[in-house]
Image (tube, rainbow, N blue to C red; front, side, top):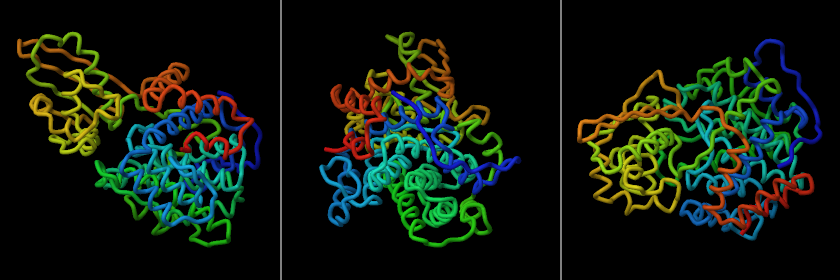
Length: 453
């Protein structure tokens, strides 16, 4: 895949660590040639992966309902609706496409952001790119800016925001979607400032929705909110001076920590987005380190009976993916115990079609699942898991895995191409890859063919 291009305006950061408001405005104004090779390549891989899971998620009930709603309302044909051969208003496309991209819960994760970056930001970038007939490279550049903005807001809000029950994919993601859409729409600094303040009153999303259709809807709402805020600001709509960090602003009212260390190493010197991680299992990312650790022990377990399994994990995951007895296929994706039973029974964790209601009710898996206990360990990072398997014959096996270990982008690209081929077929996956490899020759509308019917 190709990289880089030209640019627009740069906003200078203050010498000391900026406020989130200042930092976001500076990120929004970053020229294309200030985007490092690593962050650009990360952006391209994220676009590829998100398009693949979006195409694979066309048939999900949440996706169908969101599309039906958008099609019933109709409106100006500005942006492509995923899964349909039609174009709809930009904010409607962002809503439906964001929901579709997150419907399988098979999209990327940023542990510093504490959420899924691409599904909230990319649909807003693509919708705005189509609406203004931007070059495809501008869409990717806008997406990268927005993804970085979402990562910075997520870190500034901190863990307290997440622990209180907010879904950072949607809350931080709305700010990222605004930066992405606003930079593509050509907002000047004043208009971008207002757009960010407008979206502060719109950003929303709750973790209580996990395991339901409303979890992917959170991503769609974030993308829609970003596009809407930009469209309003572009027309002169006004808002508070600082809707994020000001008195009674988003951070103060939503259990945010306003962690200024989020901007201690601002871009272009450092891009947090390069720490993005990608799913190779179709379930909550919090379970993936456990899956990898347990998979490494399967050869040693073969032919022996497991008495118990203990998985040590960061405590925050206990309120996310420790559903003891999942009732549905969706809930299985958030169950350490059931997923561990799948691994030991040779059931694929990578194929999305595996996660059915019948799987949740499988008596053999349920009997195996009760042997697992998840324990929170503060010293473990979000991407770490440590496993202790006690065997019925008295033997003990241990393993650990860290998702935050450095990733080679070439190796990752090959893995994502394999994942995409399994999800949507070799031909469709290769067509998306080739479009991104020929980005300079494409418009946003050409790029959107990747998600069309």
